[in-house]
Length: 217
Image (tube, rainbow, N blue to C red):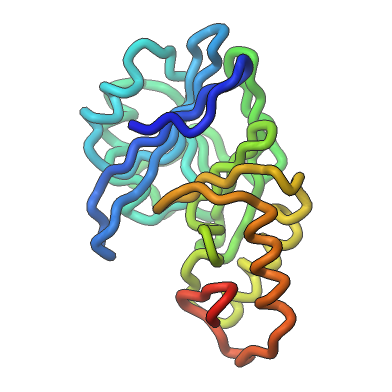
């Protein structure tokens, strides 16, 4: 497990598990309040026993889901059975989960635990109910944005929607916001804004979708 952030207010740890069908691995994140030990798990990709091991010593309060794709929820049923804590997900992705969430999110809600309050951001495009979770200047982005580009989309309409989500919901955050994606390593918001400016300065096929990169698509 890698510690990606720690200060007196919040600790964020990343555990990479899998594999998924693209021969890569999926990140889940444990957000912990250092003062109380209360924690939240974001995504439940696989290997429930490993996730439970990482949660030891904390007081888990919620499981939050960025989106309903299998590589992010493979361990969800086992974790729910073991921990018995509420699951939160967007209502538009709820039917794609292996079990019904306890909390249906629309975006804009605050989820509080310990001395931490995180905000759910609805960022559709990768899926209709994709969510990001913001804690101060830390953004857990699921598959909405990665280093170098947006998440994969299935149609030109989805591609337009995910870019709208990124520009309207994410690029308005402070430039020094750290982004923790669903796969791979963290990135900085300012870096993504700079590369997106290059992308948006060029003309593109109006039917562009799929795997898009800011600098080469």
